[in-house]
Each structure stands twice: as C-alpha cells, then as structure tokens.
Image: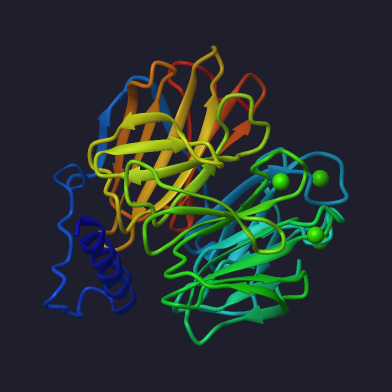
Length: 371
Ligand SMILES: [Ca+2]
Ligand SMILES: [Ca+2]
Ligand SMILES: [Ca+2]
Ligand SMILES: [Ca+2]
C-alpha cells in the first residue's frame, strides 16, 4: 500500500513538473515544500566556507554539468561549464577560452561526453518528457536525436562492451522500459520495465565494462549487463526515483549511488547494500534532482557534498557531511541549482555549485582561494 502511494505520488510529481503548478490533479495533492527549504541562506557552518562567484555567464542558462579535464589540444586543463543553452570552457587563468551554443532549444540536462574518446568533447542532452535525447557535436550542431512515444525520463552514456566507444541508455516513462542505443543513437536492445526514472552506466563489478543501473516504478534499483540481462535488483531505505553517482572509499571515479530520502541521504554500493546514511533535514524522497561529490579542501578537510534541487519549489539544498558523517555545512538556494563538482586548485580542491547562468565557488574560510 505504502509503495503504491509512493508510485502515485511520484507520478503526480512528474505530471505536476511537466504541466507546472497550474495543473491540478485532485487525486494526488502536490507535496508540500519542507519547512527547511523556505528561507534561502546558510543554515549551518557559515564559518567553514567562503563563497565567491567563479563565473557569471547568462548565455549558458541553467548550469547542468561542471567538468575539469583536458578538453582541447592546447596544453593545460580546462574547466567546462555546461548549461542548457551553451557550454563555456575556462582556461587555467579562469578566463573563457571557448563558448559553444547548442543548436537546439528545449534541452533539459546537458552533460559533457566524449563518444569516441578522441579528446574532443560532445554534449548529451539527457532528455525528459519535454525534450528529446540529443547528442550535440563539439560545435553545438545536432549529431542525432532519440525519442519514444512513451516519453523519455532520462538517458546516460558509457562503454558497455569495452570497445572504447560510448553507448547510450534511455530510460522511458510508463511501460516504455529501457533501451540501449549505439554510439549512433540507434536502438540495440529493449528491456521492459515501468517508469525508468533515472539511468546511469557504471562499472558495477570492476571488469572495465559498464553495467546499466536504473530506478523504476517500484522504487528499486536494477543492474543490467551489456545484453540487457538483469544482474541484480535491490532497494534502498527510501523509494528511489532520482539518484546520482559519487566517489566513496577507494573509488577513482564516481560509482556509488546517492539517493535522497525524506530527511536523509543514503549512499549505496552500485551492486546493492547501504554503505552510509547522512541526516539531511529538508531533503525529500521524491521530486528532486540529486548531485554529489567528495571534496578535499586545502588543510585536509574531506567532506561529502550533496546538492538536491527541487524545480517545482524553486529551491535547492546543499549539504557537506564530514568524515564523522555529521553536517558541517548546510545552505538553501532560492533557485533550483543543478550542478556540483569538486575541482583541483594549487593547494586543495574547491567546490563548485552551478545555478542559472552562474557558478559559485566554495573554499575554506580564512585561506587564499586555491587555484
Ligand atoms: Ca587543454
Ligand atoms: Ca569526441
Ligand atoms: Ca562501447
Ligand atoms: Ca562491469
């Protein structure tokens, strides 16, 4: 009964987010905003961190991905700020080197990918009911699009067969199931399931090939191999719809699951099993967009950062939990910020939060900005 109510509530959230709050669904009352989200500001740990604006660039729109790496043929790393409308690459001086505008509007969550691993990044619009899955070329033109009559909930990129080229997986709404797409965006296989809210490709068993990890109408997580065969199905403490990946323990790349619950954040092994639970007042189980990263500040402070964004309430909440799993920092934003990253500086890392046309940089208070 409880799980049926959760599915109904999750459907309601999805429909309401689609048709905005003007749509009334009498059978599913809209969830109330947690009281902790009402007033934007730093709620805890205001002496821990210093917050500055890294970049303000309206042309990017809502920032949905931030990546640090070698993204052009010139020496030195770049910081990629990817938004719904454009991507900006910053050089080591912090100045923009290149701006790429996307040749299609109506995007949702655009992330940086490199399909051929040739060092030239492309961009994936992960898609939603309101937008297609789109692979943009490096110059922002459209390479291919994918859509389904069921509606897309999410899509992700990863190498499932270990040949060095990325495949794509699309999670579809209602009874659309899960579809694996080739590097060219063509359907390879289909597996049935209900409401595939969120998908990722992650190497669950450590053999160098990615497995498909997705949530479903039952609030479960499911692991599929490269052929689409179910490897495992498991549940967390909460109903899992949206989730994200983070580094935990010895992870060199993000591969542990982060799922929001009502008032807490749960970290799970990608193959199943809870490894940590963080108290997080104001976090709601359903309707959020979750981002997470580990951050190692100068001076040795190591924190697990989680950002949960609620488009329907125009709010997001940032938590930093310390190694004792206590809340070290808590901030509410008066907008639905959707990007979080830790990036290296000269002494330690800094934490970046991407909002609408803007990226905030957090570094330890009382120290010079690293980098
Ligand atoms: Ca470079
Ligand atoms: Ca490429
Ligand atoms: Ca491949
Ligand atoms: Ca694997």
